[in-house]
Length: 214
Image 1 (spheres, one colour):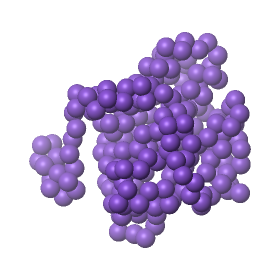
Image 2 (cartoon, rainbow, N blue to C red):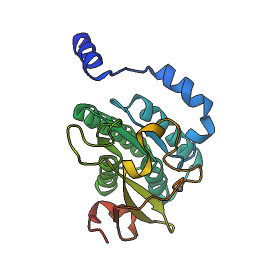
Image 3 (cartoon, rainbow, N blue to C red):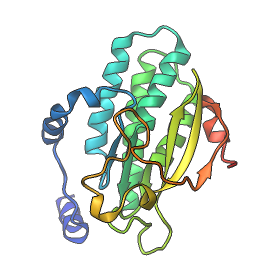
Image 4 (cartoon, rainbow, N blue to C red):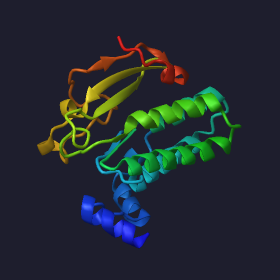
C-alpha cells in the first residue's frame, strides 16, 4: 500500500491531505460549506478527502432542518450533492470518490428513510456528471482533445431542475484556475459562457432519464 502511494505521488504529483488539514481549511469558510447551494470545485479531487468533508457539513445542515416531508428531504440532499464538483486525472480515483460520496449519502438518508432505489439512482447519476475524469491543467480528458464537461443544475421551481452543460474551458481558463470561481455566491454562474447542451426542465427525481438535449 505504501509503495503504491509513493508511486502515485512520483507519477502524478498526488498528495493525500488529512481530514484535520481539510477541516482547518474549510473552517475558514464554514458558513459557505453549510449552505446547500454553495458550490465547491476540487480540481485534483483524489478519492474525495476534500469533497467528503464539504458533503458532511452540508448533510449536517440538512439534519438540523428536521424535515418530515420525504420529498423535501430528498431535494435538499439533491441540492447539496449537485453543488459538489471534482476532477481527477486518474480514473481509479474518480470511481473511488464517487463511491465514497455515495456511501455517505446513502447512510445519511437511511438513518431517516428506507432505501430508495430511484432516489439513489439520481444521486449516482449526479455524481457521474459532477465528479469527472480529466486533466485540470489542460482542461481536457487525459491524452485527448475532448474537453471536460460539467453540468450546472438549477432549481427552477419547487421540485423541477434545469440542466445546462458547459465545457470546463468555457468556464475557466488555465491562468485563472486558482482565482476565478466556478459559480457566484448566489449559486448562479459568475459569468455567462455559452452552454454546449441544454436539457428540458424536469422533476429532479427524473434527471437520469433526461439525456435528450434541446
